[in-house]
Length: 631
Image 1 (cartoon, rainbow, N blue to C red):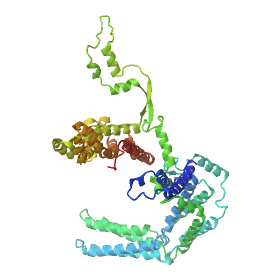
Image 2: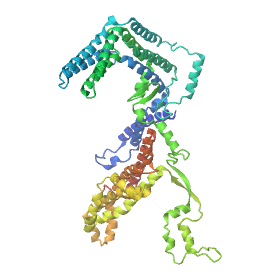
Image 3: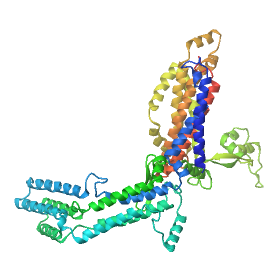
Image 4: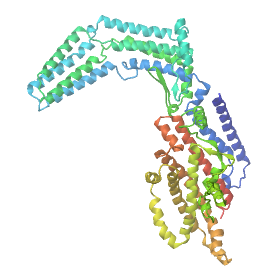
């Protein structure tokens, strides 16, 4: 229901954005020439259009629209797939799905194999002449049994009756299938059992990508019943063999001669043993193949064609829904079970995804007993302990209290300060974020912040000083081209799998980017502005603060945007390698258990967090350097 409402809202938003955009174009200034940055400002309606378009594609290609508007469609397609699978084995025998009869293809293939084997034996120099003659005679005898299977005069009456009975059963099914009375009503006991089984059956997508296999509609029951009948016909046909007495006597003679020859071989005659086994395999393939006279199965073939035509006609609206609402695939059957085959299999439905994401946010569910994002009440004393170092109390004058002869310890000012910096005091509690998303966010923020704090000053220093550039440039360029993943195993080994190693790895990533950005900004300052500042009597510090740093800010903030994206990619890889919390850890565990919805949730969360980082930095750029692009 909710997915259907969202779909309609998306369609209205797309149409409204397009109409509003067309209206806005007519009222825009005509003097805004191409290349003017003013032309790129605004356009929130186009943002809405792009977002809605992506969401609509997700809904459509994940088959969530089909699930919302036609919740029984997957179950009905499952029953159709059962009929298709049942027919497939029978169609395989005839030039319906194939180019020629299966019997013809087998005969053609085995004749070629026998002739090739005769030629290979005749050209084998290591074989004795009498062995060659015996092998060729066996192969010729094997080849001569094929006409015994294809000659209609040898076809037994019992086999003809079975083929006729199967043909008539398919014809009756073809006649009854379009009728409203098909399938016939079940007995009260059987109907009761069917209803009980349906009540236990879960809905489409209730267990990931599972499709409910038991028929839930009248149309689905019709196809399900037909599939069961076709399976029985197929099993009976393939259990039948066109083996008459003359053929069996010939085969028995060939097998007896092969056994006698094998019994006369010793351990040293490996080549002869290999050839006789291959000859035996050729005969076995012919023996177990479904080979019949060319016209013996014509009536059966026609009955299968007729039923296939009728069942396709009966699909009607099911086929239309399959074409319109199941792009790129359909529901397929494998025995009694059905599954999604197409983008709906690996692209989770938004309704399932957000439902699972909601469960993962809950502390009672979470992922590996940790919520994706929640809060916990933490005392202010713990926060003070985190930010204030213990040595603040150590540097105060005086000594810590010493116990008295009465066994009491009287606190003094120094011990009270120590209690404060170590958080050993009572305080009120405040909500603090926690969970996998928060852990990843905090690691990226700390790594990026440290990279900015240490990288920007060093980059500006390298851009202004010959010594700094010459001394630090080789060190930075030595590690900068190395992919962050190459450092990850070493850093995790040194610092462990805790947060310190991951934050240090992110610091290395952002540090080099910020150095390059700050250096490029410092060296790109216009010399005329520096000369103007000198002529006005500015000091070095004033020139650095008022001229060089403001001119470097565009490059620095662009570097921050690049570094934020690199940090997210590196963090997920680091949490893949080692970690017990974080988005990368969640994705790695979900990958092992093939939890596609959870994998897509982690991808979506990473994208949203990266987008929020980027939007925040863009807002900072707009507010702090409004002169960008106007100098």
